[in-house]
Image 1 (cartoon, rainbow, N blue to C red):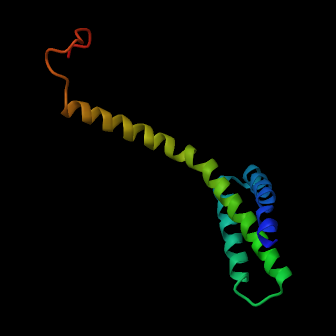
Image 2: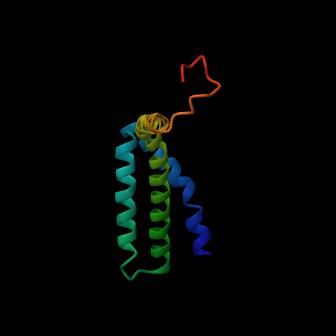
Image 3: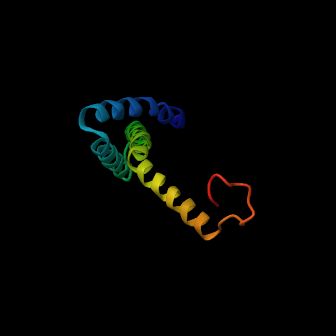
Length: 111
């Protein structure tokens, strides 16, 4: 039953982090969610009742799901520029090291 309750925590975590992303930004909301998850997981180390342990697990699951959602929202903004140039230069250098044969069928390209 505890697994069902903590699985339900994904929706509030997603809503909380989406509100945080709109108000404080993606990086700060991601940091807040990771820090909050760490606090809830560290609270699970103490001997507590089953109700408190379930609440701590609920909070940890909600915040880690929200942190991953913030990560997946933030990553394409940062890495798309890098990956574009990485693949562009990779293919440029690959084809410059391995040019097509001289008797190719590309007369318009001058190859």
